[in-house]
Length: 114
Image 1: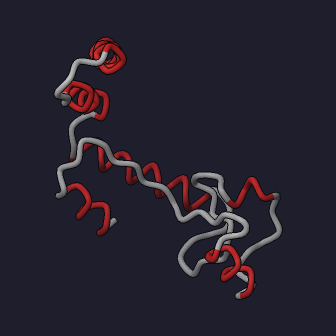
Image 2: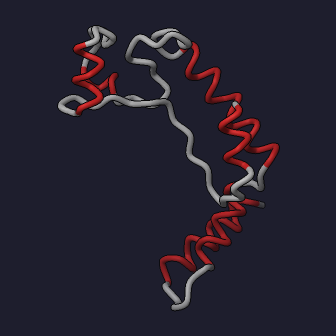
């Protein structure tokens, strides 16, 4: 949560927070496998958001800790920052040249924000 609190001080328009993911055939995956920290899951689980797929001293395997932490983080972000739908309007309108796609997305965000 300390890192999340620091993140909000950067005044971004969008925040995307996810647990560490391991992908097969990567250096991290091989390292965790050699350290016997990977557990026997189908490969899809190693890259599944909010699923703890390897042994970590602070988190339980599976969804329990990650989903709880993810929810806590996003509630905090919503309380400390502007709503991301409203921020999306600012992003889509921040352009030098008009693009119909971005104008349409900004209008969709205005509709959703109501």
